[in-house]
Length: 332
Ligand code: FA5
Image 1: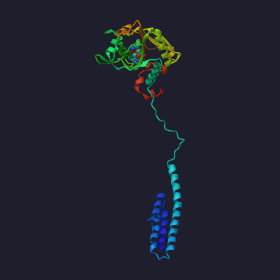
Image 2: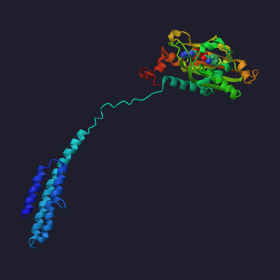
Image 3: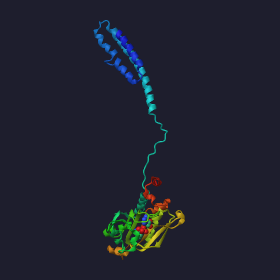
Image 4: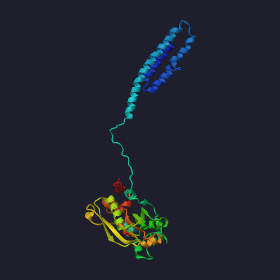
């Protein structure tokens, strides 16, 4: 009976000293577990005289129950305190502003190219790609440039070999198509072009062009004007006016340059977009196309011109400088 009392008192002291639920569990194990001090006393019961056994058993059970009750009460108290501390530590202020996730956006030239694709696809034109590293033959000879013609000087470029150059114009696609297809066809391409230029606000050594052409029966300047007009108004606004003036390109006859104007752009000044014309009969005949039956138009323009007009960008070099402060303005 003395052992019971001593152990019970020790248990109480240990309980009193515990400050966490983990320490309480340790006390529980030491005094009330199966191998624990108090409860293990029950094993001694067999060594007692039979008449003392009930009293001893009751005493041990009472001590265990009392200690367990005290422990449970403390446990509940500590647990609540620890929970409260944990919640405090992990508190989330859901009213705090969140972190803004940085999202990318398509480059403004890509956005423009996508829009151009929509417009010409909508008119039944097929999109084709054409090589940036091009043969002299496709960039010039196939387009009716006579050998050593001065028109080639305007389009000096970077030569990789004598006959291999970085294309100066997307019109180089024409020869590839004429070789492999029979009219009627409506084709367009968009891509990078290169020229050995004195670089300034409106001229880069690297820039982009759209080139569009169609061959069918009875195609004339009216089709060219209608197509270009629709394109310009869709991309730049319905108030845009178009002006055509005679110009020379070896691969068209007649040839024109064209400009757009709107009170919204530079006080209504005429701003040149590109060149156009009816495909030169020499070219069609070279590829065995019957010019009595078929004719075609072609036009090309600089992709950069579109966002320059639309957003008032004053220097085309911004497009390829990759300055995010510039590019992030065009979120599309
Ligand atoms: C051509 O390149 C002809 N291939 C266009 C054409 C196609 C005419 C079909 C007739 C039929 P040009 O050299 O003018 O033409 O260039 C056309 C447009 O490309 C220019 O109006 C301009 O918008 C753009 N461009 C030309 N050179 C540069 C450059 N260095 N930097 C930026 N844009 C340029």
